[in-house]
Image (cartoon, rainbow, N blue to C red; front, side, top):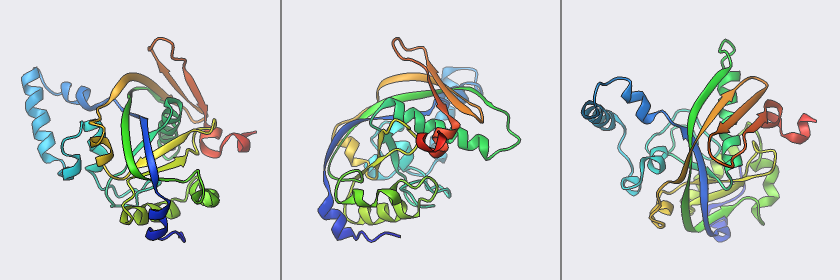
Length: 247
């Protein structure tokens, strides 16, 4: 899948410190509120639900749930830097627009994979920033790793990037910086492999805002009531194929 060995990856690691954006569905509290009649009952229900979840890795146990949750689960469905059933990866973006584009792609993907599902009405999402710091990051957008850009930016085949992440973890790499293939403006993302990068910053979510995301089969729309924030619209053709392929 990839010719990069753990030794070669370790020698390519560099420092990385950044505030990263992430966008998640804002359903955690609202979903339990609908089932109970008081704050006390909700607290009990939240405790029961927490006890039923897989145990967090020790390195993530003290993190805010928005930072810790991705490390809790081993999903049967893989992602760009996580093979099926492997440990969790926290994905963030260096710009809010890029984070919204990435989330919009997955809303669109859900719709396209469900032919009988009508367009998705606006759903509230939480956008937030959190700081990371590591001496051991790989930058796939810089030499020498950028020479395999075509492999790292494949839109549907994650085999090579999953193999890279596995070897990177063996080399002690904690973050992988990469090019977003969903943001047509050329944004960048980071895959956090080790939760310790948040702990070093004593990091907590900040700059929280609510965005409503509505998805149709031709485009995804994102809007917020935040002052000074313009709505965004992502054509499906760009999310799926990029701007150049859409024109």
